[in-house]
Length: 295
Ligand SMILES: [Zn+2]
Image (tube, rainbow, N blue to C red):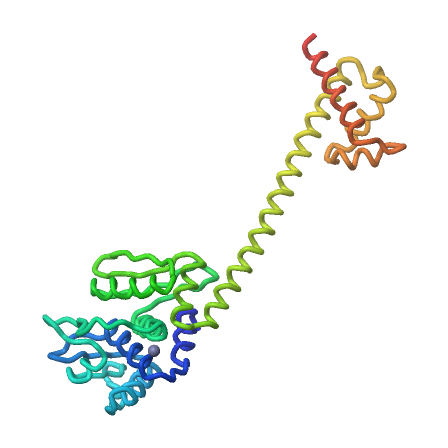
């Protein structure tokens, strides 16, 4: 099941007790999913669960029976909502478009219900393991503005954009995308999104550590090559045997262990040398090589 389907299934199973919220959710569904049809609104969906929820809410809120009817040919469920019922939920048809019949103040619970309806009718959510993206879209500018206002008043830092003929409200990072889902009360989906974020951060931390280790190895290799080159030059020009015993020991050790880190070389010395002492001797060898190559 896609993440979007998971979110929708969770929302469709959410129990709503208050009539005010059912009305608002129906309003969201019809405003975002309905099209003007005469004086009424035609709403179609191929989701049986959504059709069922809509008919139950309409029966409870408006006391009308809309049996969800499957249009066999289209494979979808259709509802024709007459003007009388639209006015009860604050919608109307004007100039052949779905419009708002009254601008009523919504309670917090109803704002969430409205956004949930909007998402059910016209929302999308990307798989959070791939991207953080939650969208609600409509062809109606007023509806986009209105819904944007509601969502931002609920404290969500979402954005809106016009994309071709669509007005899109969206969240595009882990925070505003999950906040947008939180508004619809899809709490399970929100958890899933946060889980994905934690996993991703864990992976990034591991990758950073690996990169850091690789850079360290590169640095060790580069230093060690430089030292070994210097010692080979000394050997060629005067012979390692001509060096003072302490330098000679370090020079042989480095040549025999080109890939070893400074700490590893220290431990190979007998008795083990301090890192600073070994470093001084290697630097001295490089200095001698530089002087020899200048001659
Ligand atoms: Zn309410």
